[in-house]
Figure 1 (cartoon, helix red, strand yellow):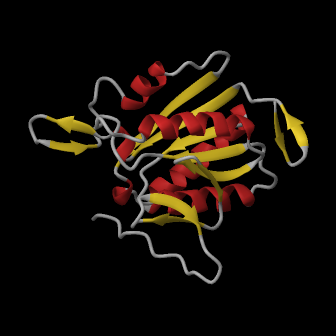
Figure 2 (cartoon, helix red, strand yellow):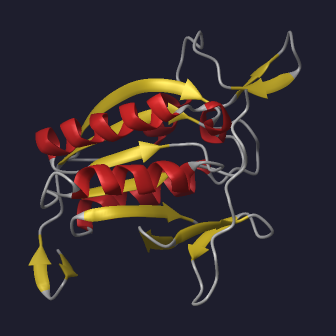
Figure 3 (cartoon, rainbow, N blue to C red):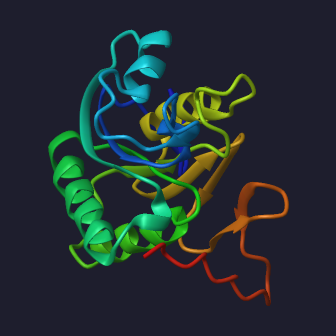
Length: 199
């Protein structure tokens, strides 16, 4: 049991994981010699990570929505993610979105605005990703996914970024590019614009 808002909350047992791509799911291409997001990958990186975790009693619905570098995401992609989150939140009560870190804040804000326009949120939405791909030896992917899976079971309704031992509620999340972390916007600080999408 956890305490959220002064009330005991039993951990949620049913969650959805929506995969959208990003660094966490990049794989190495021997032909091209680069790490990239590939739709033709026979074994999904997220499935490999989930297979390594002990998750007794947790029922996971896995949705492979897209596999894109977030810099390549369009407004239509952000809208699709937001409506898919709404559907899965209504169905299961808790959602983890695996996403690229470059535009994670833009998608998190879009999800928050979309859900807020629909009335009270039925549960939490947790955004997570990785600064270094799962395929690298020194990766933060498994840590961040594990933290997200625990957080989404315990947090009250809202939209959050969960990475690197931090839980940050939207709005007011920013990527600190110098430290390769997410943090709260400081008082009086203007948020730095996110990188431009790739054409």
